[in-house]
Amino acid sequence: MPSSVPTWDELLSSAQRSAVHWEMRDSYAVDYETGPFADWRAGVRLDPEDRESWWRPWHSLIAETVAKGVVVRRVRIVSEPVSEYTRFLYDGTFKNIIAGEQVRWLPRRQASDIALPGNDGWLIDGRLIRWNHFTGDGASAGGEISEDPAAAKLCADAFEAAWARATPHENYKIS
Image (cartoon, rainbow, N blue to C red; front, side, top):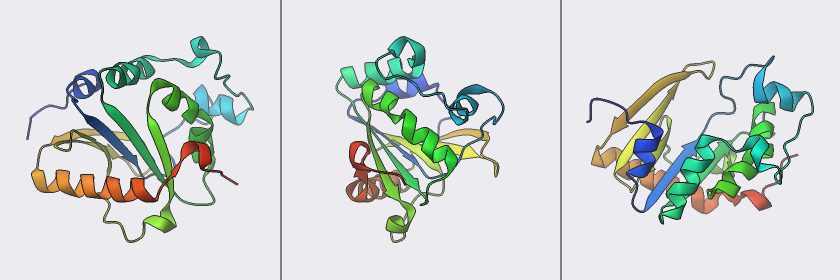
């Protein structure tokens, strides 16, 4: 296992064919009083046509990755009814899609028989895992890199099973 976690630029630039990402938490550490989530809670909605107001370096990195032929897919496994934070993510998913990601949603009840990894993460080209660790309240607890073939197979199989059941963003409706 490599001793250091690469930057996101290094990780995604290493991808040749695929970068898949699975998210399984109903909320991540957010500041309820300031920032994008607080703005959203106050009724602010971003205009997809006004890219300058929301486009960030992350979106450029995804767009560059996709432009070189890498397929970037994200599946969000969520409890229903969805949390307020998941609604916030849902409303902002247009940014991921415009950047070039494919995004699907899977209700947690439909994932009960899928052997999912214990943590969120990324799988690059079916071989390199970037685990995303979080504290109980959703704060980042750092990343970890693994090239363990058995773990990579678990992640690939779990992702593909979840992806096959998940609903594309444009068809997923939250209530």
